[in-house]
Amino acid sequence: MKLSVFILLLFYMFFIAPGAGNQEDPLFQNLITGQLDKVDPLVVAVFSMLGVYPVIFAMLLLPKDQYRLPAWPFVLFSFGLGAFSLLPYLFLRKNKVRTLPRGPKTFHKVIIHPIAVTLMLIITVTIYISSLSGSFLSYQNAFMNSHFVSVMTIDFFVLIWLSYDVLKKDWNFRFSWLAFIPAIGPLVLLLKRKILQK
Image: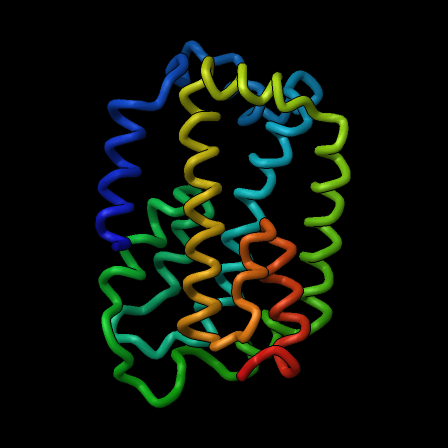
């Protein structure tokens, strides 16, 4: 399934995604250079979420890194590549081969400590609030006219699905479907993990 999604994502990026390429795309230039006041707040919110999700996946994958393939390089690359980095890892990691996760136990405790999770939750809620002044029509126009926004949007939805998949399979949460509430869902589950795990 994940291999199929990865191939479809690549196919979409190279052959289907509408809009101007990065060099001719003012939206891309504004987002990358930090001129966010020139971009619709809803577009900025999704772009910002692509910075939140790699942190969430670090919280989800590193404390459960018991597979043959180490998670940390893929988590690191996800800060720039998003689902394009995580999909190959989740497809290739296969079965668990270790009794304990890689890395120091203290590090695992720190990255999923309630303070760290709460901080990310505050950042996420702030992004949600900032998006309220955005326009779905403006986002639709951006999606159709910017190749970057088109690919970014699909990447965002794939990340939401992957967070659900990891929460269900690696963490055994009873309410893993909450992951479909972008970013807030996974963070709430991590914050309440002692209550919500099976």
